[in-house]
Image (cartoon, rainbow, N blue to C red):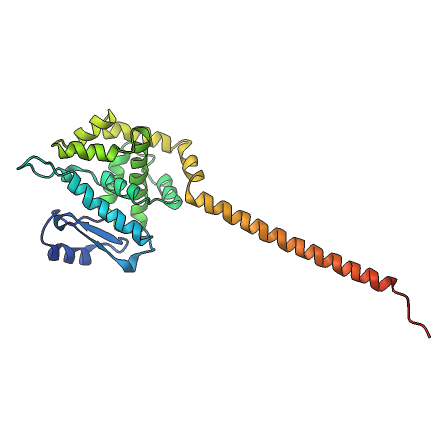
Length: 252
């Protein structure tokens, strides 16, 4: 998601900003000020657009997160602005079921996994990236970290954080209450796991691994069938030659 500056304004102004300023790699944008999402259908299928339903789910999640974090107390300003981008993007990508094996390859090869402050690295990339290549590691990192939080604590981790923000707490306070540790501490655990065996588990259980296995089995079956067909043809040719050699010669 690309956020418009200011986080509010009339629909026509936000829509104009979205159409003019959304970078080439973005397929959708959420406009929380007007509870509107814009999807560029002409960019579906390219990173990070991919499928239409995933893009729509991603942008709608941004709007729902913004609404869910709005405090109930009258006269209290929205706390959504205190949410870091890595949290917003990670939650949206998780609910939209985004994240593929190539994204994680970019993540592993990027400075994010080697950084002492991976969340800051992700945040800076989300805020300042201008190309698809520059954002891949950031989006994959946000998605992976969100999955880590939900696996380590609860599938309802994002909802519980938003619930406390709705009660008036800031993001960091709400996060620490649910996780029992600040974001930096959780990020250190996630980063160490990502650098170890978790990366191979991720690859082995990814959709790529499944389809790669299916492809290998299909190719193996094709090669086996072709070899079997050639072997049968050679046997038929040999049998035909043997029959011709054993046939009696015609006489007068």
